[in-house]
Image (cartoon, rainbow, N blue to C red; front, side, top):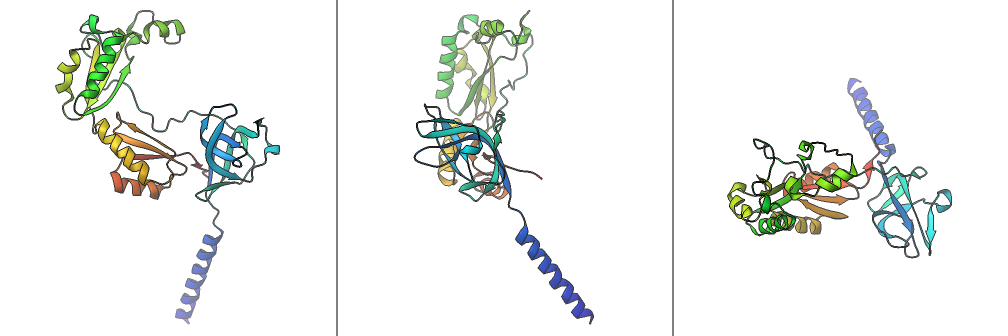
Length: 284
């Protein structure tokens, strides 16, 4: 009898688990963006909008959309507007599970890089070493020279020490216009693989402004090759860019499931290709 009772309990538990799995709700996703339809396609959630008149886009088909239920713009057979949408995703379409609402635009900071200067501040602060070579023309020449050197990875300018200027007000547009693009007040950042300081003499031959040379894990050429390979091999790529400062490639797709990022890490190396999803999961 004991054996029969245990068997009955196990069957009941298995049946309960199966029923729970069968009624488990589908994952819902959300996004803020433009929805557009025209004479070629129905309502689509746009990944990228071409700002023509009227606008155009290719995106994800939205099922259950009703233009009569939302405020929108219309021109020459094109209807569009910006909305917050929520729905289930089957790999090709978004099926609405609730009425769309007006979008709340938020800057997408995914994949953004810290562009501060990684070198320690020199004694006396960041200053030009040869003011006659701290000009716009010299800055352009330094960037051109850097890109020709072996192991070039990334470049950017930092206005980190503008606050050292007496009376400078970062909130005053006149101060920003006066100082922000002055090569004598910028730190030129250059990154290379290997020993970055070995390139200093070549850069200093044309640039006399403040300079920070730092090491990068991968060259621009390596990341470009990785980006081209990954965008061909990963399905559903919406856009991609390389980030020399961070040493990786950023790729945007509709949905990033954890198992997809794990597969990408295993194939290309952990952290080398970072996925970002346009659709975000709706958390309970």
